[in-house]
Structures are given as structure tokens and as C-alpha cells.
Length: 498
Image 1 (cartoon, one colour):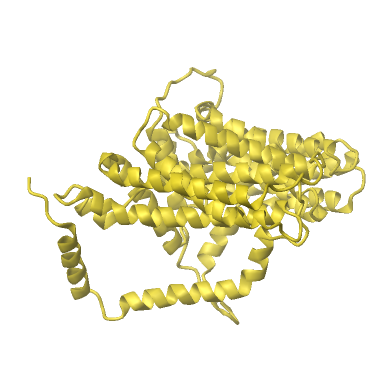
Image 2 (spheres, helix red, strand yellow):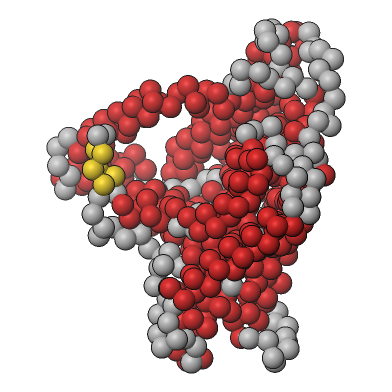
């Protein structure tokens, strides 16, 4: 087979595209993107800057170490989920298997990925510098953004090597998950007051600069090795990365988050070997399905158990923010089995075969999310009380009373379906706002308003009485009953997004 020069193929593609594309279309897209970045940056630059550069840094060893570990683990896991090496969908369809130079085909994508990872690493270095370094910033610490950029490029090269299905690829994902969990645990410990004092001091400028130069040489050497080994990256991995990038773009362009949710679920189950377990025959069929799905995702349960400590990160924030953070976590807990109700709403043919009405379906789908949400709320509120963020009282009982709220929120979120773009837009002084994406974004979170008694209780800062627990339990049960009666019928099977 004769190899064709890739530059000639790309020139032919560009000429063909130009023949079918209006003049100025590309420049118009670039102008719109640049104008959008400038306008949004001008409106939010102060708030975004406060996120990575707070006015009062913590200036502790634990803060800097935990933040660096969490960022490292999170960036690596994101790179692994994105590929990280991919192509555009047209290039993946027509050029990946064509007789063109494979290295020259993949090299532009690799360079773009390296630059992006370096930018994210530099931003992470600025965040570590802003949160963990005293003011004024020491001279050696000023090299942290450069070290962060080099570390981001190194993580990309490591993820690129893991993309080729090495024997250690899965182990690296586990190690990154542990690193992320350890970093979040350190941040929770720091927010609870367990952090040590100020750091002992920075090394000399020559030592930090020497480390940065050595890291730059290592990254350069491994980048050259990665360029030479681009031919060995499997086609299926590149195609998978291309599909991921295309799905993310479609979801952002069409304001349709369900595309990403469906992609994640399909990818997870495609790489799993399923084994069935016989459950008691008296158990309702849909409850049994939720239990089987829960049993087949043990890692998500571990992450869910660890997430009970995340509301403690808002321990120093205003009380109402702490309450909202705790309530939002229940939506995450109840959503572990939300894929099943999403499937029921999108394709209810199995429900017709089982002879189940929409009311029976939603009632059965509420049980497992309700138990998960109740357990999560009880553990999270108990931990907040133990760390001193909540006054005395039976907070575990209040968490159990919040179970129906989390279950209804998760089921409503799962029944949302596709965004309804046929709704009339809202006219504002800044322009029109699409109503469909806005309603889809708040679906599920609006049901959390049933937790208003809990928000008021935490905001007041007074000891929790059993009367407040009974009030929250009554509001939660009444809200769940009203949702079940108002959005389902005993003679209808279809589950519309309500």
C-alpha cells in the first residue's frame, strides 16, 4: 500500500470545505467565540480570580499538599476519560484508516493536548500558590505556575502511554483515584481545624529553579518518545476519544446534558462482565433491578461514602450555603440508580410488557434512592455535627427524614429527558434566554425546596429539637406523595419528564 502525503490530503479537504461554506463563516465563528470570552471574562473575572487567588490564604502545609494531590488526581482522571489523544470526527472517519502518515496525522492533536494540559497545570499551580502561600509571595514560590504547567504536560504524557492499553493502565486510574480521595480528605481535615501551622519555609531559589529545569528536560524527553510512538496507539482508543470529544461538543452546543449522561452509562456497562444474583421473589421487580445495578457498581458506593465529608468543605461559609451543600449531596446519592428511571422514561416498552402503570413504576423507583439518600444525609449531618459545624441535636434523625426529599429529587432529575427547545424564551435586558435548558438545569434541584425546614434550622444555628425532625419528615413524605399523585396515573404507562 502506498502512503499518500498528508498535507496534500488536508489541502484538498480544506478546498472542498471552502466550496460548500459561505464566505466569512469561519471568521464569524472565531469572532463570536472571542467576543463571548471577552464579555464573560469582563463580567466574571473578579469572581473567577477570587477562586484561584483568595484574599486570605490558609498558608499551611496541609492545604498546599492536599490541593496539589487533589488536582493531580483529578486532572489525570479527566485526561484518561477524554482519551487524551483523539481526532475530530471527520478525521477519525476518513483519515485514521486511510493510507496517510499516521504520525503526522496525530501530531497536531498531541500538541494541542499538551498545550491544554500545561495551561490547566499552570492554573492549578496558581491556585496552590494562592491558597497555600503567605503574602507577600516568596520568590521561589513564584515558579509554582511553571512547575504546574510542566506537571500537567507530564500527566498528559502518562495518560497517553496508558491509552495504549498498558498492563498498568487500570492501576494508574486506581492510584489517581486514591490521590484524589486523599487530597479531598486533607482539605476536609484542614476545614475542620486539624491543619498544622504555617509552612517551615521555601527552599532556595536555585534549588526550585534546578528542579523546574530538570522537570522540563524530563518532559521534553518523554514528549519526543511519545511522538515516536504515536503509531502504536490503538485505533479503537483514538475513535473512542473522538466520540467522547464529539459528544461533549454536541452537548455544549445543543445545551443537552443527557448526551453526556447516556455516553457515560453506555461506556461503563460496555466494559463490564455482568453476573446475576437471584433476589427474593417477593421483592418488586423494579426494586430488584435497582438493587442489581447498585451491586454492580461498588466503586460508586465507595465514592458516595467518601462524599459524605465534602459538605464539611463549606464549614466556614455562611450557614445557608452549608445547608444547601448538604441538601445537594442527597441528589447525588439518590442518583446512583437514576439511569434506570431514565431508561423507563425514554423507552417504556418493558413497562408495557410487565403491565406496570406509571404510578407503580415511580413508586418502586423511589425505594432504593430513598434509602441511599437517607443514609447519605444521616452520615453527612452526623459528621458535620462531630466536626463542630452544627449545634447539638439528633442530626442523624434529621438526615433520615430527608430521605424522601433526595429520592424525589433524583427521580425527577432522571425523568427530565431531552431539553424542550419549543418553549417560549424569556426576554431580559441582556437578551433572550432559552427556557428549555433553564428548566432542565434546575430539574431535581427545585424539589430540594422540600428541605426548607432543614435550611432554616441550620441557618438559625440553634440546637436541633425533635419537633424540627418531625416537621421535616412530614414535609418530605407529603411532598413525595404529592409528586407521585400529580405526575403519574394508574392507567398510564408513559413517564413524561415531570
